[in-house]
Image (cartoon, rainbow, N blue to C red; front, side):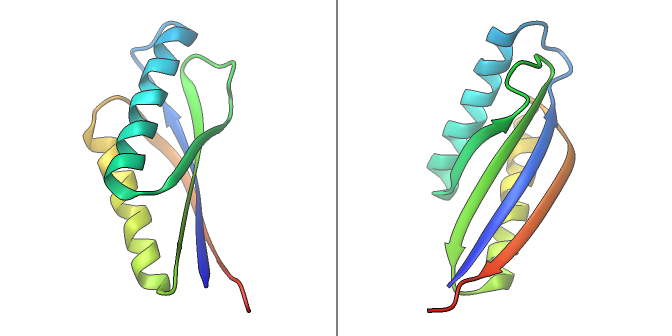
Length: 97
């Protein structure tokens, strides 16, 4: 079993409040969950109104496929034009049984 974990830092340039940030983050999280069946949540920067850090996790048995799915998720997020990805990090963890 392989677990893919991504940390994605977003900037929300046209946002001016925490309420607006929550709306953008909630929209992205719901869309990614629905479209990609991925575990996703805001994991840092809760009190910053123009920055968000999201954690994404996928489980599978093909590392290449998991990396590709994470890339697709990031491309999808950018295609929504709600926020810009300014940093990302992807790690794969092989869990032996």
